[in-house]
Image 1: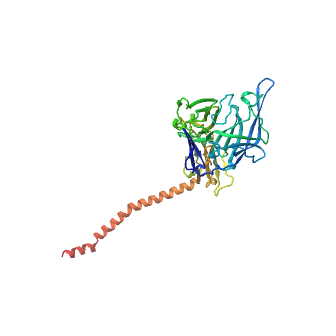
Image 2: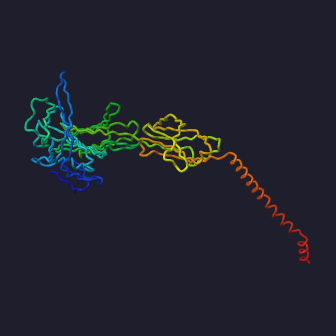
Length: 448
């Protein structure tokens, strides 16, 4: 017996040892649980044997719709209709966002000649399989659902492992959703030393399925196994997935602290014979540059002197970075002028895989350059907008500077002399008053 808990943002269905998390409007997004139909493109296949005896497949894109309802419902649109009847696997419970952001694609699915009857009532050896993949255009999720269509009789006169049923433009195909594989991390971009969680969730329409879960990393044309688990044997290899959560349909993978070697495409595969579903999750690393210039916000230069101006972009990843120096007159300009005499250092590669780079120039300004603002602009993949560091230039005349120094020196000297002479002057006055004739006479009278 299947018992749902309270339906709020997250609903859970339990069926024996299988625990299916049905996400409805996670994080406040719109629920599409009552969606009646969805436009799709049906990527049909035409298979034939060429003159050399080899099998060739051509792909034809056709208009179709996914329609949700019950056996016997009429099509809502005059096109190829895949009627998805009620089952324990309902892809609508996992959809997020709004309908206009959903992209749907239906394809035929071949089980590769494996004759394994799906273990639910009414299933036949000659069932025809399709996959429906719905993705959010802004990368919220990708879900692939397997649709089982039972024909009256097996096809004849075709290759065993490609028993494609001919589908006409207004055909109605009644199907049942039997399995899904979902990821809410279709692509991941993180910094160094992070531990991202790559989401992979699955569900089937019957309890205690024999499930095999694998995670592989593909990079530079090679695949390496990261983790594997078989419910049939109970054995697992590798790390990154909590085995105890697999029975609940959670096969998410936790990446170890990221380094340059973590980049690649992570592949989550779920096999419930005769079906095999997977999602490719590209993981890229990105670190923002730390930008600095070697002067303060105001730079004062004496006419005739020069200054080396350096703009450093440090500890960024990936490699490509763009550094520009430009200047603007006082009051700003709609088109700042880019400096042409800029030199660049070679890229420095650090042990952690990040890079550093510098752009510098030598400034020997004239008096008319005083008041200009100089800016270093750094652009990089990791930045939404470029980073800017600026300083204002003040150019001073050496003659006026010398006069100012002389005047200031004179004033300081006078102050020193005054501070030295004033106490002596005041002390002399006191001594003169003390030994004057009037003071002596007054003292004698006092004694008499």
